[in-house]
Amino acid sequence: MANYAENRKARFNYEIVEKYETGIELLGVEVKSVRGGQMSLEGAFVIVRGGEVYLINANIPPYQAKNAPKDYDPLRNRRLLLTKKEITELAGNEKNKSLTIVPISVYNKGRKIKVEIALVKGKKKFDKRRALEKRETDRSIRREMKRGE
Image (cartoon, rainbow, N blue to C red):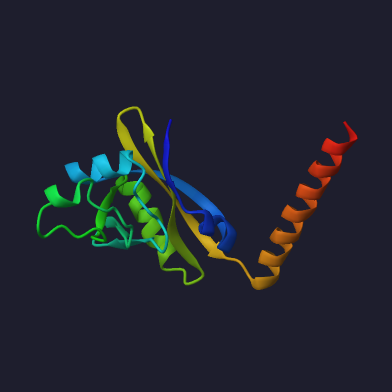
């Protein structure tokens, strides 16, 4: 299972409440570009509109810029594929103002490209500081353990 793109900021800025695995509707040139590792999830988010789920603001540049269609938009909205039950769950949770939906990673499962999205809650500044402190202490402990061997 190859990991094509990851949203590292999402794990730092948000507390993950629930994860979902979705399919994504892509054009042929986009599939080649994603498999080439050119996709970026920086600043991307997910919305539910009219019984469908869309990935907004994900950047997928054309695989070969000179062969791309003239009207190709790398930031276009892409539909995510979920069951009706999951869509209604997400739509209900999206109404809650403290929760939002963000993409976490893009990977393959067999021949299919999947997007892992998560229902998240924003972290406060002190929670982010605590996460940084924990990471630093873990790093220093590993460093000391390595010296002791």
